[in-house]
Length: 196
Ligand SMILES: O=C(CO)[C@@H](O)[C@H](O)[C@H](O)[C@H](O)COP(=O)(O)O
Ligand SMILES: [Zn+2]
Image (cartoon, rainbow, N blue to C red; front, side, top):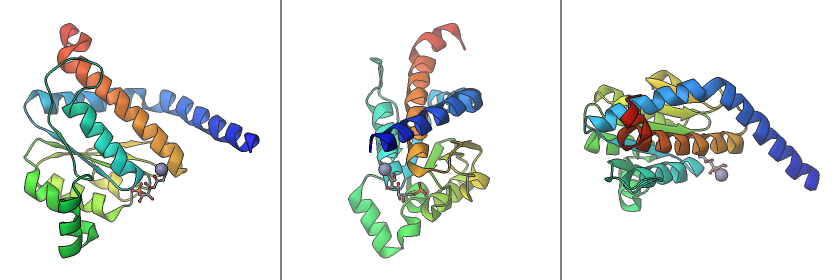
């Protein structure tokens, strides 16, 4: 068992080394887009299934409440969280529409709609990003594997370079925390002061 644990930790470390090499610039670029979105009064809408539903809720919580800084609340909604809405749409229209219906109802042009999917192939996330695109939103994917079918409907696809679902999720939550730091510092902190 200890060998198994060691192997998991080694895989995690190797992946994070790759993320550092390949994704530092794309993560900073994505943060800039999110900062611009929030600066002009638009909001973030975030969704995913399973572990990625938890990530969506986690991300929205950091933005609305706070990450590290004392600062005003910022607008972000998790589309994976409201059981009444999700069961109503799922029951009446089908599971594929649980996110797209919320995008129809809540999205405004200029909002950033963020789909989190380790396979890049969840149909409900794909449909929501298609609707978001038609509504004039910026579409963003936190993805894995080869980006799947969702990659094609993303203005900004960020793909964690792994085919192992748990490792991809570990990449996603780290990216989310870095984005939260950059958003706070970009709007209210060191990067805002330095105009970076
Ligand atoms: O958390 C995990 C696996 O670590 C699972 O709950 C996982 O999120 C679920 O199987 C999801 O349905 C996978 O969807 P996706 O990431 O491929 O869009
Ligand atoms: Zn999990």
